[in-house]
Length: 151
Figure 1: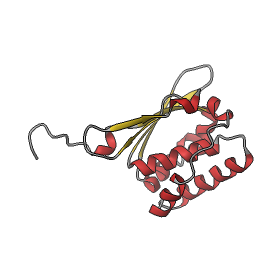
Figure 2: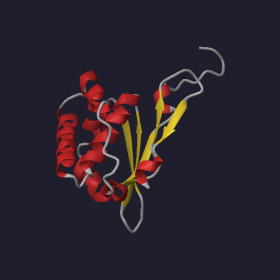
Figure 3: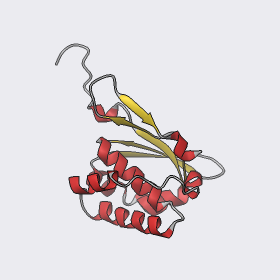
Figure 4: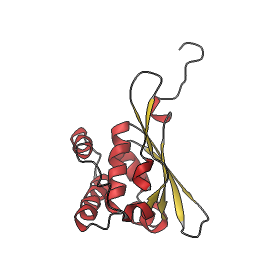
């Protein structure tokens, strides 16, 4: 390895960070974060949950891992938090999938082809913050900020 070369994989350079309501965190990760480890293993990601002492009981969520896996999880978080029953049910199916088995390339590609429904305003109160996803490419990394989804 050359001097000055980072030893961290590129997946760790641009984590996805956002805030989630406490009740949604419990729905996704289970009481006491029971499902956290299996979601990490099945999505090939590392997920850090940090409870914040706020009036709304938000949790800061940091996800590192492959771009497609982070994007898949983001879609799942959006859909689970949606008040649209069709989207919510799709999110619950995605949640059951990632809890029960490793995600395949087919799962990851299928999720990317259907962008989250950004007009569901209920999501703005359920997930907040600036989400950034890096696009794998040569340095310097290009980062897309999806903060408009939360305003």
